[in-house]
Image (cartoon, rainbow, N blue to C red; front, side):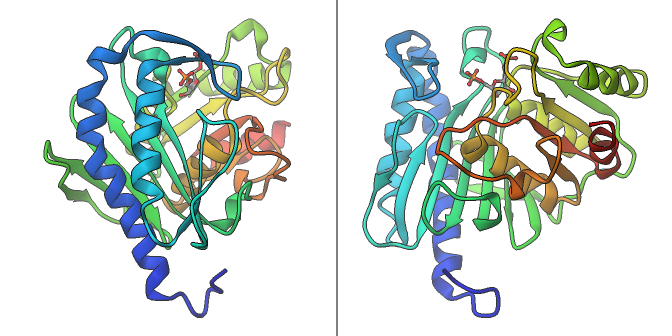
Length: 291
Ligand code: AHG
């Protein structure tokens, strides 16, 4: 593990290489979606039916990310366990296709990457880099490392050009997006949602990456909250909560599991779920105050 005082060139190489692999793979993943919208008869570790696209994107990213010398472990929302990949000190996690259920209605989807310094499962504080690709009208990528967030347009050849540097959430929040079914929200989240709905505009598309990118762009809050039937929520801490929490906190926002920063959440197992709340700091503080 590198201490903060002596980060070495390797840490930069591994993070930069992982970002580059995901950027260069993005056009291929996007191009391969059309023919892979069907369901397989397999389920992932979270008990969700896998699309052909989930499995294909996952295999593609596993092969390329584990080829990075400093990567010693790979894990994915679509795989049960950790893939050992040599003695590199970094562990990478992916949600290869976030929002798979959006493929059928041709709505936005994404790919999420986390780069942890140390073995998995790991707390969010071990992240040294995180990124997501958004398959929207254009393909963009957001990266975060050393407290700085950058947005890129990804070209068809996988090259990318920075379009926004040192990205921070706008001071004035504008949008909100809350997952789950309203009757399944807890009373305390429903109270919070009512307050926020009176102040902001609803933007919920069913893929975390699309909804989070709205919050990063316009300011506001995204939540996939605790539910009456599922107090731990739906999203996975290791593959979704931690990387997105890292990115939003790097952009001057805040993240929470309802009590504390997602990055400080206790990690028990690789596929553990967590409620996810990310956005402008005062909106997250108001949520925690009401919990
Ligand atoms: P999936 O990849 O199975 O479609 O799940 C996506 C996640 C996340 O991206 C999104 O915020 C949430 O699930 C949407 O869940 P609902 O379908 O319950 O709204």
